[in-house]
Length: 415
Image 1 (cartoon, helix red, strand yellow):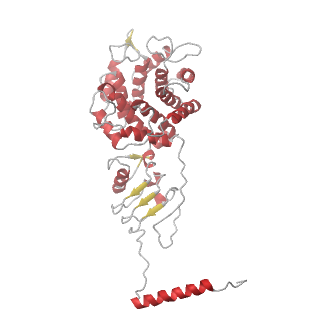
Image 2: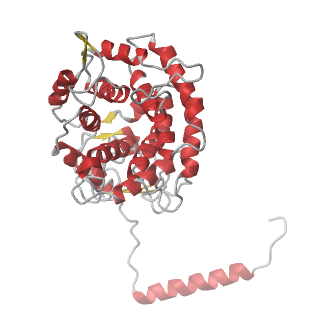
Image 3: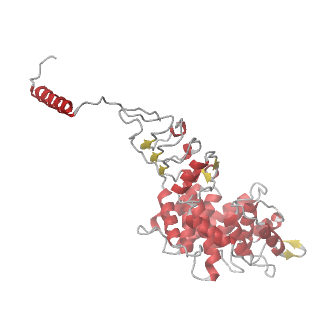
């Protein structure tokens, strides 16, 4: 971005060409509704039996949507201060807390101790060590293992899921217990889990493909929204963009245009928000890349503008949420890192210690920039010689007469 000056060198007016993705706004609306439904203690849900599940899901949704703001951190705090006592809840809680500096060694220890024994060999997981292996608990534990960075006893669990896949002609999913047909929600969770382990077990690829084909059969347009969301997440994590778009399109069309929720339901909205937010980041690993911001005053100003704690770390996805920044007289000397605020539309950086604004050069959405009073742009006003009041009146009168004469003069042809 090149800067030109004419009378006001600090003010730029550029045309803004928004290029929001198909799923950006649905994700933002869903996240906003979730934040508005949070309990005063930081949890989601109205009863102890569901709070851990709902809160884990909501925190993951807000994090995926790069809405790591007040509601997100309050949810993390609630999860940190509330223990979980079975494989299901510990797996969900660990997944939500991964990457935020929590010591989750206890979760790995619990999962290792809870893994079922089958003839002296480790198999999958049940709800606890007192239960036989089930597809849904094994899937949740495997997801937690992958996010915690552990491969302890994983192959036996993968083998359990491969062996428990149904073998019907059009039904190659996973059932609940001994049911005689696949359950789409369980199948979606298993596909999400297995997709994380294909690098170490190539035989999982056809197993996953069969699971996706079953989801395509079972999850039609009449399926519950919560199942659509789980299927969309599974298809995305398995890399099937065509099937994912089918489920995602249904999610977008079923979202409330009034409040941004799905069915005004916490759990459904959390899963749907996460699914559409995953779709907004076509390169999620890139969006999650931390951004180095060496100037702490700038980091504090950005976090405050995003409604976050002053010294929280920032990644590219979160900086992309920044559309306006006001940081006057904050002692900012270095804008490094702000180049990732790709949707920044206005910035007021007056009276800081800036010698350069080079990090802003390629911000194509930047419509207004004010940075006078900095060493690089002192903004010294043009000095007009003082004229006594009578002289000012005579000058104004002379200008008025001249303009009247100019405007009434005949146009000279050929001039």
